[in-house]
Image (cartoon, rainbow, N blue to C red; front, side):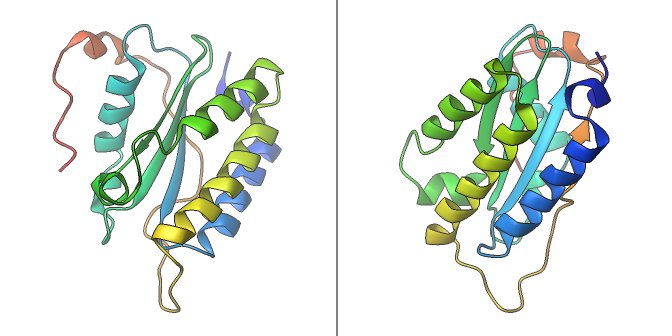
Length: 161
């Protein structure tokens, strides 16, 4: 299944708009990445994707990645060090549970838009919006075809520079 089958172009636009809206209230940066497969550890794959997309380059280290492997029905939410230092452990557990319900119901776009809005609200408490804040990362959904998945067996989590 291609990305457009999982999230059609109109859905991708809705998600990008949801990210734009959510980021109006926070300096946090929200990113969504989709891949078809993740046969191994989903958090390890999310970390590698986080690093590959250079999400650690934000000024406040407050990017968050929503990572979905739709064919293997796996997901992870991963925050950068600035977020992880500021929020309690398990901060994203509720979002993972809610998004899982939407995905099981076959409503990925609705789920992502709802979760992104909630994430923006929650991030605004720790990282409130600022007048001169700039959008440091793209709001577009990113995608890979899973070709590098065999690398996921490697135990190296990357450096999250």
